[in-house]
Length: 299
Image (tube, rainbow, N blue to C red; front, side, top):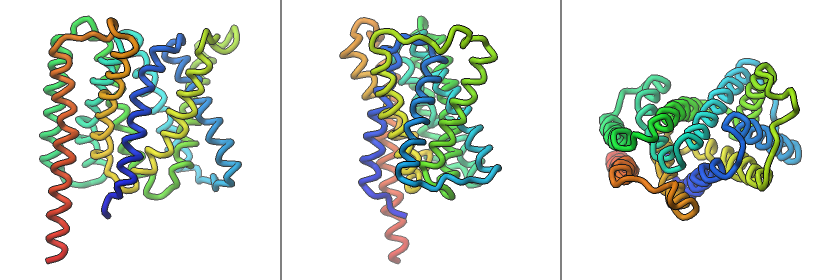
């Protein structure tokens, strides 16, 4: 099925919003776990209200419900490790390392979709690994952040591949609602057992509430539905390679807003450039493949 340009534009806009989440994570005073608790709770609440207002069909079987809730837990841990990486390093390092999600997807997708491994994906993934090596090798002060960002990247690959399967049989808003609710439920249980709620929910400071509404409403609730929906036409590998543009938007914004804190060595920018070149190569190779397929079909 041909990919409509409209869906590609929607995906790129969502990627810009995701690039902005790193900035919001740095601005919000909360620790990563508390931040994600508020983010997922707010996003889930907005989606539930929207679904009832639009009279969306939300009935679901127990098996699917279990899968969506568990996937939501994966997403929660992905976001916790993502924001923790920002807290212990910076926005630029975290977003650059998150691009390695394509490496993990190239390994997971053939298993989940039961198809052969494509050489194109392996080569592009190796290119991403080279970029990551440069970042890790020459940004020694941020190694803890790199480690957490890579864990976050692996988890992002897991739920991207799973959502690629889920969206084939369910509406994107239904998937989004149950996954976000599942992630928030897991975090709530953990914080209750951990004793973090003994004095009440985590306190907000300054503009935290405003940033959280932007993060939970626009960058999560809206973006999550659209990102799942575009998977109906785009493969998970193509989707996550496009998502590799997230560091471009995020790093530019971070450099403008935080300046000295985001100043990196030339090797960081070289590594980031190598990772992002996989996006350009993937687009070029995919266009050639689709053109060849059209010719073969006409013949």
